[in-house]
Amino acid sequence: MSKILIIHTGGTIGMTKTPEGYKPDGTYFKDAVFHMDSLKAEKMPEWDFLELDPLLDSSRMGLKEWNRIGRLIADHYTSYDGFVILHGTDTMAYSASALSFMLKGLKKPVILTGSQIPLCEVRSDGRDNLITSMLIAGEGRVKEVCIYFGGLLLRGNRASKYSATGMQAFESPNYPILAKAGIYVQYNESAFLKERDEDFEFVAFKDVPIGMIKIFPGFRFELFESLLTEKLKGIVVETFGSGNIPDDNGVLIPMLRKAKEKGVIFVVCSQCPQATVDMDAYEAGSALKKAGALSGRDMTSEAAVAKLYYLFSVCEDAERIKEAMEQDLRGEMSVN
Ligand code: ASP
Image (cartoon, rainbow, N blue to C red; front, side, top):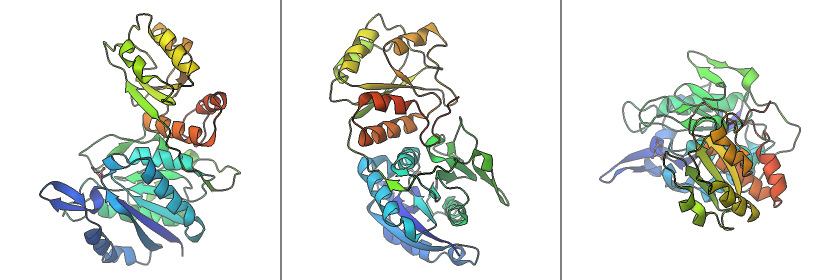
């Protein structure tokens, strides 16, 4: 019989109504979970339950919480066969991406899930999300950080939140789904992360200043020059299509070159959920490449941010960080 650890971090699944809106309610949620008959069924793995203090709406989570969740998994790694992290949907894809980099050499399932409707409500999707995540974590076939939500199991660092209202809240537009839960859980094993021959290690993230800019028509690059100081270590630039930007009026290249001299790393991602950045495809993308920006290829912006944190946490050499940024480290990007 396998044994899993459930870690409740907050999010809609465990919220109850207050005059100010839904809010995490640890007492209610713990009681509801411990009284749920299905969780005691024979088919279920054995489980223990931990919760973060304070429980948070995931919009308030950041580096500190990622490190706490990663540390908890690492501290209990040998005692459990898998982990289920209950988390708000708003930033679940960021946390899943962060954990995928923090948990180096992971050889057990870490499944993030939550719900669109709190467990306390009649139509809650939390019950199925929790039960199926626990079964997947207990089965132990997928050995990576995943999001299970609305019947789909997705690689965590390939997923993005797609809907604030639908029960299928996440998608993985540039990578196949890892499993579909219908009457049976149908795994797509060929898409699983290939096991790497490395020991499990937890890497805490350092509080490195990382930024993200979304380009829009009429974007005035010069207004952002003041941002590009040595205080900033890395920046994700969300461009159009396959890496295109508006006319830069000749300011971008000198500006990026100056920033580059200060050690700032630029990673280009696309605003199109389904895309691969190719700065050679159009003349409109070539300025970024000439200025030394790196291609995020088909990475989500969430994964790019997490990868920057990770690389700056393990390495100080800008050239090595740049090299690693364009390599696939945890199945987060396709390289050919
Ligand atoms: N605001 C909530 C959160 O991210 C939304 C949710 O959980 O669905 O914590």
